[in-house]
Length: 161
Image 1 (cartoon, rainbow, N blue to C red):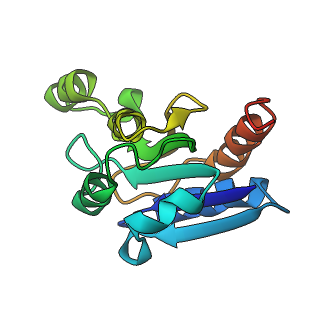
Image 2 (image 1 turned 90 degrees about the horizontal axis):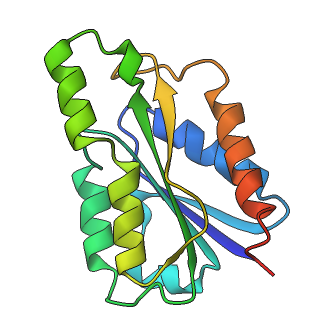
């Protein structure tokens, strides 16, 4: 099975999660690709495509959005997909207005997953968020381990037979 994990990272937190996810798929063929080196034409070679982004302004980074827009219509047909983001937990947001906005506009993972499906991908897991202490990080305790567990649950889901 060929696994491609494409991510963007602003402060290194999303990269750490992408690498933790990738470690769960060993000994599968895993490519962990920073968005600056990602080519939308190459995604058709993957059996599983996982895309992750930090949540910035209630959405994925512009680079991730541009990458997703460049994938041709039905370019992910026959490819399993999953999406993740890094985010601040709602309970950790002290500003009431910002908490309201997060509830209203959400995080990056769900829109990424929706776009992957619109490109023909088959979602194999609900979009997942991994928590940071604040906007620059660090990751909350045990989040890399939780990311590895999430990836293992995708692998053991039975959706790859």
